[in-house]
Amino acid sequence: MNNYDVIIAGGGVAGLYAAINLDPSLKILLVSKRELTLCNSALAQGGIAGVYNSPSDSPELHKQDTFIAGGFENDPESTDILVNEAKIDIDRIIKLGVDFDKTPDGDYHRTLEGGHGRHRIFHHKDATGFEILTKLIAYVRTLKNVHIIENAVIDDVKKTSTGFSFEIIHDNKKQVYNCHFGILCTGGIGRVYKYTTNSAIATGDGITFAYELGARIKHLSYIQFHPTAFNDHKSRECFLISEAVRGEGAYLKNCNGERFMHNYDKRLELAPRDVVSHSIIFESKKTGSKNFYLDITHKDPEFVKNRFPMIYQKLLDVGYDMTKDLIPVYPCHHYLMGGIDVDTNARTTVDRLYACGECSHTGVHGNNRLASNSLLEALVFSRRAAADINSRIKDAGDDYRQAQFEDTSSYPPIPKGIKTEIRELMQDSYFVIPNVSKIPSSLKRVTEIKKMLEEGKFLKNQNYVEAKSLATVAFIVLSEAEKILSENAEIPENQREKE
Image (cartoon, rainbow, N blue to C red; front, side, top):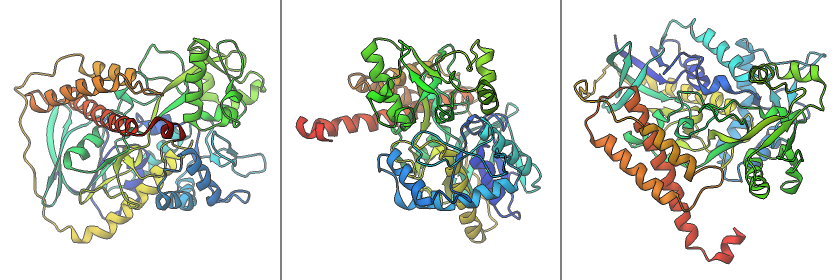
């Protein structure tokens, strides 16, 4: 009863769309850490970028913008696939019921966001991710071959001769589930930071499982900080003010109420995210203040309310009317460009293990993700993963081997404060502009924490899993950062300036 053809870890857009595209004859288990609607996919506001029935646009132009935003570190083959296959998946999700906004003449409304040279962002008001997610959830729930377990924590994954064994905590009980193929769709690493736009599930669990299985992890230090998170640092989860607000004409202003982006980039507020975030930090040092604002009060109030109903209401709930007031914003952790390294079919370097969505590294984002390419990446590569598994499943056989897992029920829980300490270390040493002097000491301490969790005898519960994941993720990020610093230190200063 606990044997499946495919186990999918993660119930966001990537995981759901993989389940939809897998052969309906396959027995599939989809495991969600919390309820299906609590994930980073649900928080995607701006939209999904893509060329679909767009006569004034082309995949090549989309590719160029993606490369420019990504510092030309993008993988050419994967990016070609992303922009050229966008039409396949945008068409498919429309047929699954996704309701994108339309213009009065009935065409799809395409908005503009930072880094894009064309209006190519399909959206549902300012809640596109939630719209796509809920329509995919509704469809997956009709699939008789897909078994969904919500509010379940995967505490370990082991390779077997026939695939994988997943140990899962659900309803305070542990059970082992076996499969021939595994797909990791576990999202990002936002909770490794003190402040993030990510949901509570984003602790890097899938990346840690893959790392421990021996998969190659690439560019985990390529972290994107969104320039316009609501500046209310009272909670770890910061409400995002969508890129699309600037796309519709909002201005960025400093503590003196002055626009400043013209001092840093000719694209002004519509420069790519990393450029805007860096500009805010530079301006903060210049003015001696962390007070920055987004101003859209010059736009028609009814347009703003109708275009951004969710953002408008959320700001109203905390005392700001975006049609009248300046919105306090500041950079905040947002997205991961690196992750579990995969090929164009989402295969990892571990046989039969796939990774899709934010936890994966397809290479399409380079060193900085272009706005609204994330939902597209999740759809395109999870579909390709499913197609690859469909082509390989006939060779998987009927046998299932089950790995053995240690019983930790008699062990004590981990000490308190570990996750908080890791977040403080990351926030202090590796924010928008890394603190070079703090990286070595932060890495040393994170290494100690990681070793203590791996070698100690502790109760393996959700708190342990997340703490070990955060320690592992922080270790990889800071190790990469220290290596880059070391390599740069070997370059003569005059050459470094040219770089």
